[in-house]
Image: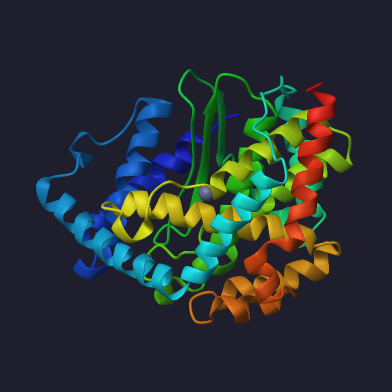
Length: 340
Ligand SMILES: [Zn+2]
């Protein structure tokens, strides 16, 4: 499965021309995007602009951008220290309740038709809109899914281009890669539904909830595989492994790099939310409406208000009581299956 060459190279050309001719304050946000579009073109088609290598001046711009981003994330951390402490306590309680690190089991491999079928069936469980966004990415050839030695996975997008692409590369196209595709399509849903319409408000500064929609669709997809009896053992193993995203050694306050801060905070928060959201999304179409309110308001509302949109009590969220039993039970079934 590959990305349409003409589509991507055209977008690269448009983005380059925008960066060269656009308004100065807009352009700086698109520099890094241009670099990634270019790298992807080189990687896939051996085709790109040689001079897209960033200059010292471009890096300075990106550094300034990251500084702003870091300030925003640190402020979020300071205002929500209770939530971060709550997550740490929750992990300790999981450990105390016998949650185990488990060996990796062999995952099922899929062919391209199977992947498309599973993904479209899954995204249609939320209704037509999610289904159409997923379908568009297959139909317009916006997904690269290839065998390669080095694992890579990302969603590239540009608010200027108003669209994006999914790039996934792994030795085996197995349950793990398919779950990653569900994750990246979650970004695509968020981008198409909220980030483009609200791009002015966001100013492209990374928001703390950026990984919430993607990790939600990823974990919910793993639950879907279990419910459909598709590589149950693999799906349980992957779900189990995501718990480790809640563990971080670094102190947010003293994180030197915004990248580190982003990875620690944004993924930790994403998966903690995802585990919770998956426990309250029984009626998926109804849930998606509530979740959409959450996603639209995430720049203005505080955590307590966001949680109320999806019917989760703030104190319960802090304690993790809603997700304790489901995660322990998944772990227990897996240990039994793998004969521990
Ligand atoms: Zn992501």
